[in-house]
Image (cartoon, rainbow over all chains, first blue to last red; front, side, top):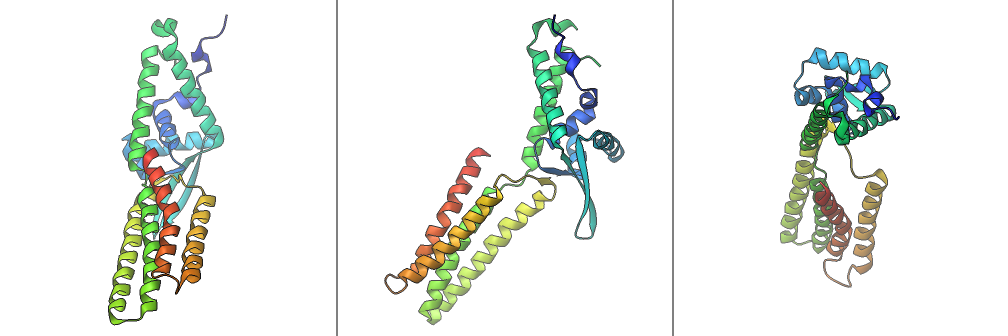
Length: 104
Length: 144
């Protein structure tokens, strides 16, 4: 008997804010911190906390720089993060397409 | 945390909405290449008008230069404003270099070779140099 697809879900990616963060980063080379915050409609501190968690896991890279004299932070997906996110999406699609998982 | 089918659907929908939001905020590259094509054409025109050396040509040169600068600044500023927040490039570096080298070669080679043989030779060179930029802009626009 093969394991249910849910067994392959990555808990680190599955958390809603982290999942949304990775979904945003998957669409660009880099995203600016404030753009992500506004797009995800979350607070600075929550985004900062979840981004640090993903950075520690090696899923994203955080780069600090300046635009003029203003400090800015950019986030990007690492190859490991992209693989983890794409695998997670594939697993979610599999769950959606698995009829027996409806009541789990 | 074990998702039901409905949870998984909701997460996929959320990912789709975020993808749409990021794409909406992404800088548009095609106006940049339309602007570059137009600028190259105008540079060719400026070279021809400058060669003519009449007073009316001086006015034409000034107008063409103002339009070229306005187009370049206008397209680049609006692009860079978005690029600061959403960094995504769909044009590979090698293609940028190829387009740049092609336009310079077409503009100055055709312009110099045909100078005297036909009128507006540099403008013709500018048109030939601009075509790949416009084709690439059209492709970017089509796949946006």
